[in-house]
Amino acid sequence: MTQRTMVVDLDRCIGCKSCEVACKQENGVILGCTWNKVLTVGPTGMFPKVEMYFLPTMCQECKDAPCVKACPTGASYKNEDGVVLIDKEKCIGCRYCMMACPYGVRTFNEETKVVEKCTLCTQLQAIGEQPACVKNCPAKCRFVGDIDDPNSDVSQVIQKAGSENVHVLPDVGNHPSARYILHSKTATWKE
Image (cartoon, rainbow, N blue to C red):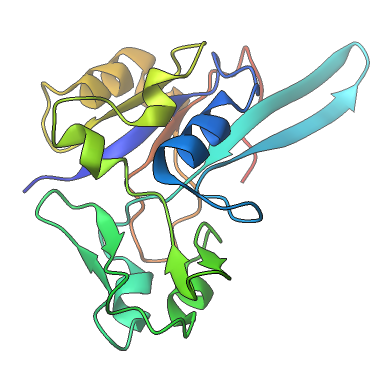
């Protein structure tokens, strides 16, 4: 089974939001919509022990995606690579998938009246390129690949980081596949 996903090294992320801009430009994401957001976690603690990190949020490419189950028309689906996508021709704009997503990473396009989300730039990957957010990250903190393949870039990055430094957003039975690397020397992971 293939499960393409994103791994983000938070030790390296500088919060510049180049990924947000690159995503909008590559995918024609309109003003007011985002497929990829960089959140700031913190600062927490007391001087001189203050912690803060940046948390890019995008579709978590859930193995058991609640958005797919909630879609009444089949517009939300998983492709053969495990990527959750939306068929805009089938989307009726009901937003049930938005309500079902535990991470709030789907957006409603007011112009086209359909729901949109990160696609891991499948159009670029189909021609052998990296997603726009990966190519344009100045810190080189983003990786895309098959998390089920032990020889993939993402699996290698996760293995090198060590399991104690690899985190996921809360799993509510959906089994998110995206991973975040954050060493305790940088900051403490916040649930």
